[in-house]
Amino acid sequence: MRDEKAMLEKLIEIGNMMTSIKNIDILMERILTEARKLVNADAGSFYLCDGNFLHFSYSQNETFQKSLLPHKKLIYSTFTIPVDLESISGYVAINGQILNIEDVYHIDQPSPFHFNPDIDKKSGYKTKSMLSIPLKNSLSKVTGVLQLINAKDQNNDIITFNDQDIPFLKHFANIASIALEKAEITRSIIMRMIKMAELRDPKETGSHVNRVAAYSTEIYEYWAKQHQVPEKKISHQKDLLRISAMLHDVGKIGITDIILKKPDKLTFVEFNEMKKHPQIGADLFSNEQSELDILSAMIALRHHERWDGTGYPGNLKGTEIPLLARIVSIADVFDALSTKRCYKDAWSLELVWEEILSQSGKQFDPELVNILCDISEIILSIKERYPD
Ligand code: C2E
Ligand code: SIN
Ligand code: SIN
Ligand code: SIN
Ligand code: FE
Ligand code: FE
Image 1 (cartoon, protein in one colour):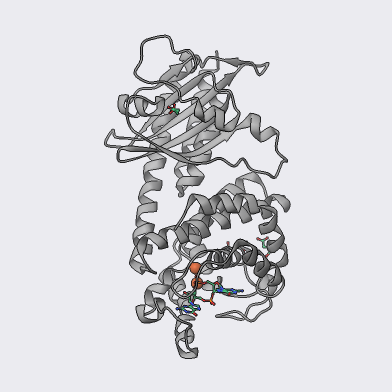
Image 2 (tube, rainbow, N blue to C red):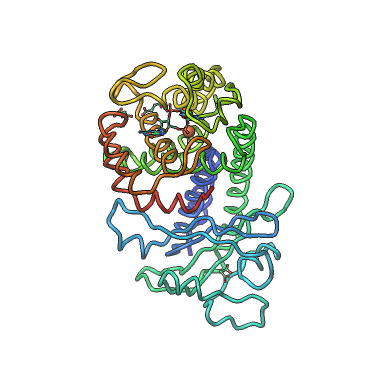
C-alpha cells in the first residue's frame, strides 16, 4: 500500500489547515475534498446531526463535476433523514464505527440498514462502494457522518475501499471533528450575536443572513476565478467572507424597533437614523484583533456604499469601495428585493432581475451584476435552501 510516513505528514498538514477554518460550510468542503483525496473516492457526502435528524448538507461528485464547464458548480438538493438503523448514515451515527460496504446494492450480511436507491435515481449516479465515517465531538457524541463513495483504482475502475486505510481515516476523522466542533462554536456565537441584534423575527433573520452570506461567497469565488486568484487565497477569503457577510447588518442592534419594524415607508428623519447602522456595526469590531474583525468592520461599514458614489456613509465611488463590500451590497439587495420585508412584499424574480440590471453602474459594480446573472442557477438553489 502506501508510504505511511508520507500519509502521517499529510495528516498533520491537513490538520493545520483545517483547524484554521472558521466556517462550517467551507470546512465541510475541505474535509470532503481531503478525505476523497486520501482514498481516491469519486464522490462523497456530508451529513450533519441535529438532534434526532441527519441533514444531508454537502456533496461532491467528480464524475459529474468533470461534465460541467470549469467555472460551473454542482447543484444538489439537501434533505433530512431520521437517525435510525434503517439508513446507512443513520446506522453509522448510532453505531459510531466506520462502515465499509463493498456494494450498496448487494449488502451480504444481514443488516438493519439498506441503501436508499432514490438518491441515485434522482441524480443519475451509480453508487457502489461506500465508506461511512462517523465524526464525534469531544464528548464522543456523533456530530456528523462523512460518506465516501466509489473508490477508484489507477484505471478509474470502481473498487472496494481498502480496510488498511481505516486507521488513517480514524485519525483524519479525529482532526476533522475537532475543526468541526470549533467551527460549530464560532457559528453559534455568531448566531447569538445576530439574534441579539434581533433584526426581526430571529428565524427570518437567520435565513436572511445565511442567504446573503452564501450569495456573497459564490459571487466572490466566481470573481476570484476570473481574476486568477490562487486557490488557497480563494478558500481563505471565502471562509472569512462567509462569516463577515452574515454580520453585515449587526449594527441594526443600535436602531430602535419602532424604525426597524415600521410597516411603512420611513420618513426622512427615520431613514437618517437608520443610516447609522453601518457605523454602529463597524464600531463593534473596532478593536481589530483579527483578520475576521477587520473584514467584518469593513463590510458592516461599506455595504451601503453605491458604485456611483451616492451611497452612505462615505460616498465612496467605484473601486474605492472594497471588492468584498461591493459583493455584499449586491447580495444584500438581491435578497431584500426577492423576499418579504416588514415594509414591502417579495418581488417576482422577473422584477428583481430587471431592477438589478437597471442598477448596473449606478447602485452596483457592473462586473458583479454580470457575475450574479452568470451564476443565477446557484443563487436560486441557495434561495431554496434557506427559505424564510
Ligand atoms: P434591507 O431591508 O435589508 O434593505 C437593504 C437594501 O436593499 C436597501 O438599503 C436598499 O439598498 C435595497 N433596496 C430595498 N428596496 C429597494 C428597491 O426598491 N430598489 C432598489 N434598487 N434597492 C432596494 P437601504 O435603502 O439603505 O435601507 C437600509 C435598511 O433600511 C433596509 O434594509 C431596511 O431595514 C430599512 N429600510 C429602508 N427603507 C425602508 C422603509 O421604507 N421602511 C422600513 N420600515 N424600513 C426601511
Ligand atoms: C445513507 O443511508 O447514508 C444513504 C442514504 C440512504 O440510504 O438513506
Ligand atoms: C479587505 O480584505 O479588507 C478587503 C478585501 C477586498 O476588498 O478585496
Ligand atoms: C481586489 O483585488 O481585491 C480588489 C480589486 C477591486 O476592487 O476590483
Ligand atoms: Fe444594511
Ligand atoms: Fe441586509
